[in-house]
Image (cartoon, rainbow, N blue to C red; front, side, top):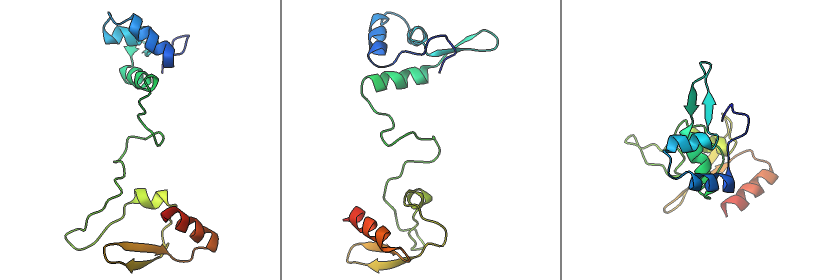
Length: 135
């Protein structure tokens, strides 16, 4: 986050310092809380993004409750739509989350208002875990 000697403030210490510095502009407040770097040319660059992230975390607002996101793609919605050609596509986000590999096969079971995909060639232990997870 910063190249300064001390690490940036976090948690209650950050909240207290921000309260003390509420009369200063936000860039100066972020800098005094340790959220800056010094470039090769000895210029100070304030990192407002990390400052705001730390401030929100200190206030108990989780930004990434399911872990760190890499910024690519969209968050999964767990919803799909039928395309104009009649197909339903299940994206790689879901198949990766299930640990599926190319070539894995499923049996399609149609219900009144639902579709079940039952993975074929699973050993009994994996099948029991999947059954418990979907129950």
